[in-house]
Image 1 (cartoon, rainbow, N blue to C red):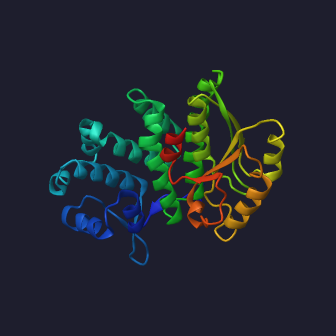
Image 2: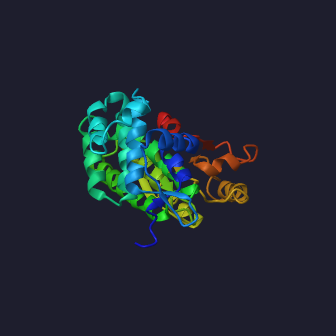
Image 3: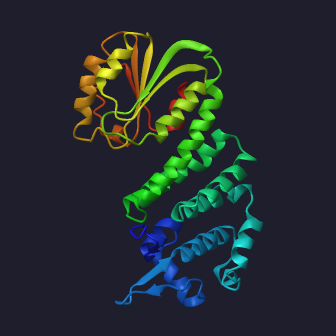
Length: 299
């Protein structure tokens, strides 16, 4: 645990809150809303309490409170004010910030409490679209900028996966009602980011289709095997980091030759790496989507 990040630079605070470092410095100097610690070389750094306070201040500020007024509130009053003013308009941002704090503290209880509060008023689909998708996008950016550690990302991803599995199991007990297609969901070799694929599995089952979920790091040979048992297969894959951009077109060429070589096979793709696909070489049986919502709308 000594290697887990628990102090933050002013740039980290900017990445978390969306408030520019310059503005944070002004708020410190004029209004004393944060009290940074100092390194031996006089560089500012902040603890988790400061991060949580800034996120609360940001929500109040976005809600119309002037920073000069917020500065008059005690440290105890600020979170109380946040809870009082959280409305339907700001609930999404408040939940995202609370999940961030749960992540930074590795606090499962806070995660479950926040999730249950959302689920009392929203469906699981609404929670996933409105909160979890933007949350994971933000977490991805925080990880890329070294604001958080991989441990934080894995902790939050695992908790969301638990909720996906629970909600998927609830609807899997119902017999499929649409037999026009069989969906096979998989990730290519060395691809382990399966959260998006797991949600697509939930939506496909919810829409009444039969779904075969293979999960992460699947070789092409395994896809060939399934063609022996099923017709009208739609293979669905999510390219987050694999295949890498210099390999993605070769991978698709091989997939076209070995998997999409029969009339009744299709491929649906999405993820960051699809931006590097040469659309002139892909098979007519391949469809590229640029968001989860776009794919769900085609079901």
